[in-house]
Image 1 (spheres, one colour):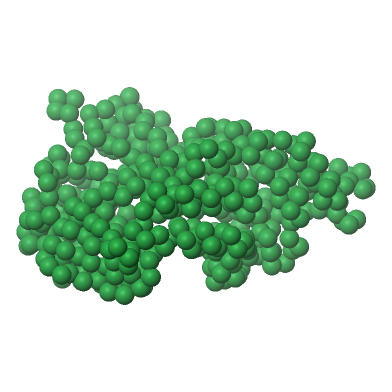
Image 2 (cartoon, rainbow, N blue to C red):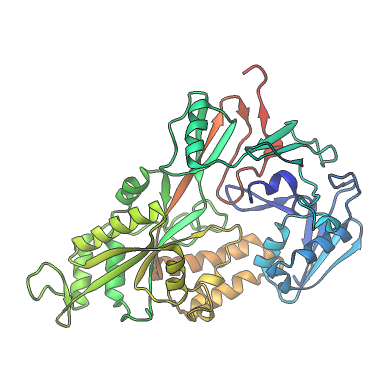
Amino acid sequence: MDRLTPLLYDSLWQVDPQTAALRPGLAQGWEYSADGLSLTFHLPPGLRWSSGEPLTALQLVNSLQASEHPTLRAFSQITAPDPRTLTLTFARIDCAAATAIGLLPLVHPDTLEAAVPVGSGPFVAEGWAGPDRTLTLHRNPYYRGPGPRLDGVSVRFLSADEVAVAATEAAFDVLGPLPAGETPTASPALQRLAYPSGQMVYIALNYAPKNEPPLPPEVRRALTLALDRPAVLSDTLAGEGQLLAGPLLPGHWAAVDSLTPPDYNPAAARDLLAQAGLRDTDGDGWLDQNGKRFELSIRLNAENPLHQKLGWLVSSYYRDLGLYARAEGVPAESLVDDLFTHDFQAAVFAWPARPDPDQRAFWLSTQAEAGAGLNLVSFQDAQVDDLLAQAVAVPGCQPETRAGLYARLQKILAQARPVDFLLAPNHTLLVSNRVRGLSPGPFAPFTWNIGDWGVEIGD
């Protein structure tokens, strides 16, 4: 449903879909106070809700507060000094909270209980209609600026079988987004538009498994050298994705472009395993530790085809080193439980790439407690903790200063590899040859600029 949000609702900021940089949205400008403890947004004159009612800063205050979004806890107060000014005061500086609050969809506070709350986006919903449950939208006559180029939009949610038929018949102007490797045969009237999905896939290597001894440091390093990553990308996604070198997606404004994935070096990996004391002592072809076969279990979501492929392929590379590695598919809910209770040695999992580069939830030592945080691999590093705290508390949230701190963080994580950063699959849109203006990226719904979409007459 997040792909419908840009059609109906504005936010104070927009996010650049390619770089995650913040742009003006409903607010035409903003500034931070000298001490960095307050953020003020300025609204342009003449804003209206799609109902025609004037839109005021006080209504936005009420809308944000009614959302009960968790990031509201980062602010001591939100006020509207005048109808076109909105001021947020931090309890303590938190740039990630500012990003999150600035990207929240804004609804008229008096319509929160409506089936489709009133917004100020480029389109207005007429409602669901017909046996196929089509959502019909028409142009918002009160939309700010020049308004959308399209008169209206119809939206349908399709099953996999329906997608295949629709692609063959070119029954829709835009079809998708479709996961990598799952794009059906399409009519010549449709063009393929591939872009990074924003899903980042990792191999989690647990520092403190609940019921297993931790992997020796040499084994962890060996596992990162065991993978022929370009071949993994080719074999699992037919190249429809990109390799990861660190915790931020390539192209993000804070990503370090010079980072590269580890090289494929099975000889060095075998040397590291030998340094860890792993030997084939009984001649059965598998490495042993302290007289017992060394075993490695890789948990994965059995309902996710990509994760299944990755688990099988990664385990085969590990087995080539003499490690008795096996991929274990489990139901999604079981995998989630194993991850949050830290009851795993290794696991295939994915996190979405978010607009703000904040990584506290994943790497802070305080988030490493089983069942209480998202530091699922029990990673603890005092320098990382310090950088995470500094980068989110930069006065004025200056991107250049934050990027410098996150650069240091990424280099540490790329070296320590608390998880093996692996790949990000693409998504694909099938787009009619007559449609113009789509510019999808990983950091925003592909509909983010639907007001700029158009149809060439006569095609």
